[in-house]
Image (cartoon, rainbow, N blue to C red):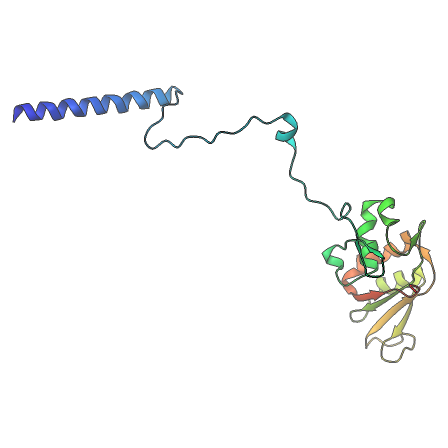
Length: 187
C-alpha cells in the first residue's frame, strides 16, 4: 500500500511541476502550447496601404446612372427623396459638386430648364410659401386647378420657367412636405 501511495504522489508531483513550469513560462511571456491553447491563425503580412485602407462603400456621388428605355440617364436618388423623381436627383447631386449637378437631366450650365410640379402634403407653412414664391412657383388647388386661396385641400406648386439651380435648392429643406414631383417642360 505504501508503494502505491508513493507512485501516485510521484506522478502528482510531476504533473504539478509541469503545470507550474508552464504557468511560470506563460507569465514570463513564453508561448507554450497546451491542450487548451488555440493556435493563432496565420495571416500574411500586410503592406502599409492594405493596413490603412478602410473599406469604402460607393457613395451616391460616385454611383453610375441608370438608363431608361428611351435612353435618358437617371442619377441615383438618396432614399430620403425617394418620391421625388426629378428634384430627388438634383437634391442628391447638389452636395456632390457642379460636375455631378451638370449630369442631372434638365440642368444646362447653372440652370434647371425642366420646370417643376410639386404635389404638397397638407397645408404649406408660411416659410415654404415664401420660398416657392421667391423662386417663381405658383400654387394651385388640385381639385379645381384654381390658384391657392384656402388653407384646406390638396395643393400643387408649379414652375414653368427656367431657374438657377441654386434658387431651386432653396426648396430642399422642405422635401418632407412634398408627396411627389414631375417635370413641366420635359417633352
